[in-house]
Length: 175
Image 1 (cartoon, rainbow, N blue to C red):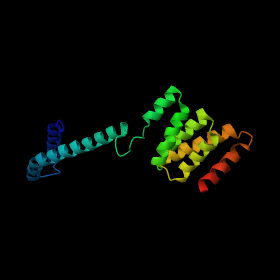
Image 2 (cartoon, rainbow, N blue to C red):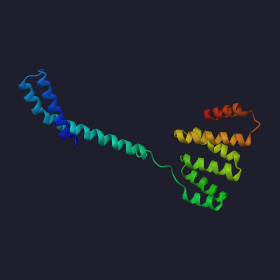
Image 3 (spheres, rainbow, N blue to C red):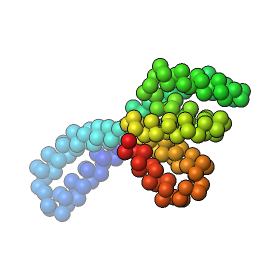
Image 4 (cartoon, one colour):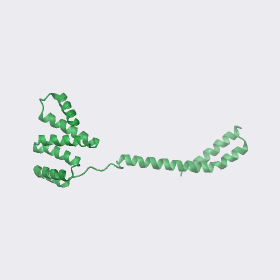
C-alpha cells in the first residue's frame, strides 16, 4: 500500500524528465500521466501477491509444514521402555508388527530396542534387513542401514573391517 504514492510520484517525475529532455511530446506525457494510475495499481497487486506467496513459502519451510506426515508414536511401548520393562515393550512391538506388517518405524524401534537393551542381535539384524527390503522411505532406509552398520561393528569387529560391512550391506540390499 505504501508503494502506491511513491510509484505514482516517481513515474510522474520520470515522464516529466522525458518531456524536459524532449524525448516525448506533451500529448504522450499527458497519456503517460493518466496511465500512472493503472500501472501503480498493477504494481501494488504484483508486490502484494509476490510478498504473500514468498512469506507463506518461507513460513512453511521454517516450520516444515506441508505433506510430510509425522512419524508414528508408540506410547505404550515408550512407557514400558522408560520403566525398564524392555521384554514387555518388545512383545508389544512384535504384536503391533503382526497387526501392521507395513509399519517400518515399529520394526526400526524394535530392532533398536533388541540391539541396545535385550542383546537380540540376530532378530535386530533380521528386522533391519526386512525394513531395507520392504521399500521404505529414504529416511527409514538410512536408519536401517546405519543400524546394521552399528550392529555389525559391535558384533563382528574382526570380520574384516569396513570392507566386510559394506559387502554384507550390499548383499542384504539385494535380497
